[in-house]
Length: 304
Ligand SMILES: [Zn+2]
Picture (cartoon, rainbow, N blue to C red):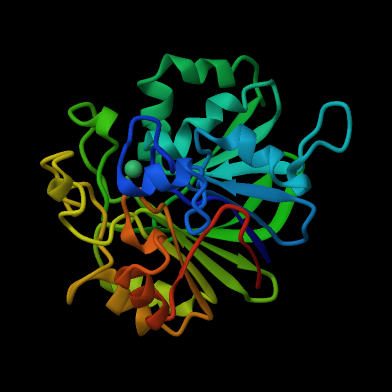
């Protein structure tokens, strides 16, 4: 299986258009230690020919351009068979509308995510102008299903692992929370290699623990280092945990949990632009390395 990280930042990217934090200033200044990052998404493939996107970020157009394996091979064509969505957040789904040019695509999503997009958003109709333009496949908690793209089987299976999260901000009050609002996506190939993609996770659960242990490669929520990362800057009154992100640092942080997992590689994605792990030389950056955990960057490739 091949994994290509297309984007590694949380919603807003890095730099974020309206952010003047130390990290965003350094990225704009071209500081060598801080690279620009687009919003989190990844591409996976069993054979390097047929690809699936994990989430369609608002930056999807530039992300496809940045990776030749995703370029068309004929006049109208794409090696992308479809998109699997881990939740219904704007930063996970907005890219669907960028991919509207009448290209057959398969979307794998939970019922909650599909309903949010199809019943509460008129823009989705532009993806359904004719039958077969967008094919919806249901992800159900605990079910392992083959990942089949518009041009046929991908050679991968996908399992939806419910993990603590929240209903998307724009759906608050419109839909009751369900366990399938937020998923970790478990991909497996025919050789038994496995990848867990969990870019948004609010907390540890026994199920997450059990599945993460079996993954050869774990791509995990690296949004915030501290619970008060944004509140201490005076940017919001909502803590990391209020925003359904398990912070990395501290005794109860995810870094300690990640450090003891046997996965071959543990890679953080969905990294918020304020996160100190992005600054080489910061103690938090060193803490990451000591835990055997990597920070993803746009263009990171892993073969497993
Ligand atoms: Zn910033």
